[in-house]
Image 1 (cartoon, rainbow, N blue to C red):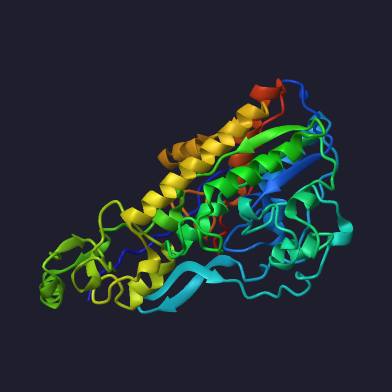
Image 2: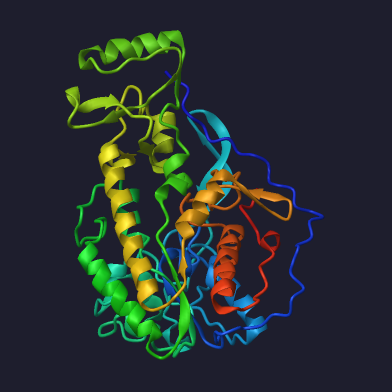
Length: 433
């Protein structure tokens, strides 16, 4: 019936022969003490990638990369609550593979089929941990007693599941330096659910209340700095730089004249839809429109999770794409507004406690336009861009290395240190079969 937007997979970038342009300045710690580094945060901090958590993802998390660089300026051991396998916990990770569907056999994301036996086992006895990043945790959860019993990732490494808060677990280390990247999942869960949550609300897919966010975030930063520790605060990135939300173009429905005529006939009663030969805007559900259906607006997003059904089940043409796979203007306004609120709160905390504020949001915007590291280009393009993993939200090891370098740049500026930058090209990207 139609030619659907298809994700074309570009050959892996050539990186052989590229030498990193690393500084020869002697590494010094400056005014910070990196001997006990603590990483506080959510999925990005834990090393989440390819739709799940797995061991090598953890080992290539940006905190792990930072710890390696910190070791050159007095940084000590860095202990993470590592999984036992690379299969993915609790769900299978995504890998590039060949699959057959309505359009034939093509290369794309498929579920890894290996075993994750033993990954659910508690590793709490190995703590306290330097990396306490917990996937799917909101800032608003950070003072919740018994959170370890509510989150399978926390359950693996929290020392006291019933009585401990995430903040209590973080404070067990006795850190001297920290990075804090809380806040992304206070809005991302709403975004990936297609805006099906409340605004604000207290349930999992809801956007967190700003009053609660401010209270919890300020309490966390107050605790992190009480022992004289220094660190950095990282803000919340916009979803517009994440390929999960931007890979499927709104006008990706390509029709021939016969197909266009058939859709014009099918949707004639709406009076607000028109189809022609070539590119068209997808059909989506909107309960405020005639027959609850309209064509998507150019500035709205279709989630990557709808791709298979668009491709093979007639979604977006004969069948409207469900609201839970579409971020409308109203939903995007909620997301944008609350990211702005959260980032103001984070920046105010940075000012109050004299802590560097890292604008990772602006950095990812720069990445959208494209950037190069020692001759290799990176962007936010799905798969071909090299920075984002197959889930379209979290980073590849190369992407986490880019994030680590931006953090190092800010640390060096703020604390008069000369921590060497990471050779991004020494880390892996998406692996092709």
